[in-house]
Length: 158
Ligand SMILES: Nc1c(NC[C@H](O)[C@H](O)[C@H](O)CO)[nH]c(=O)[nH]c1=O
Ligand SMILES: CC(=O)[C@@H](O)COP(=O)(O)O
Image 1 (tube, rainbow, N blue to C red):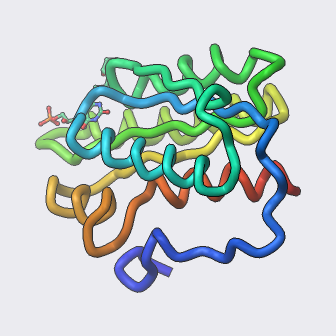
Image 2: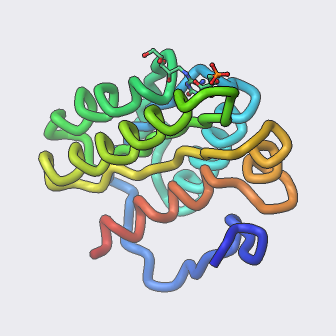
């Protein structure tokens, strides 16, 4: 279902696992900071809403979404980290650079989760333009950071 038919803030909160003693890392890209800061706020608020403690949420910034993979790996390798949430926004430009970044980040983040056998969540927007990004970072389509956080929680309850 495309995002324009589904609000990213809407989810079932039934039977969520207790996360009061779980540690989360949130790795945030600094590119498109207006968007990624909103995504981070959504993710942070959702984790706290469902019982995570502030001391158990570690934020690390990376320059751009391409660096999310290595940042996620550095956090996922920590035995104390239960889940990693990657936050980014890659906006289509004039060239194919967009495609290379998006493909690398999607595959890279997938591989980190598989390598360290823990949830590593793809909270990365890949819009055509700034408007689409803002609509998914607290606008009319909700906040992808909320979706990413609840995804991490649900995976911990697998
Ligand atoms: N254009 C965007 C980028 N580009 C930067 C790359 O992510 C990377 O930091 C650079 O290629 C050096 O390795 N990053 C985003 O997150 N969003 C963009 O729209
Ligand atoms: C996704 C990007 O890296 C993008 O901002 C680069 O823009 P361009 O393709 O116009 O160089």
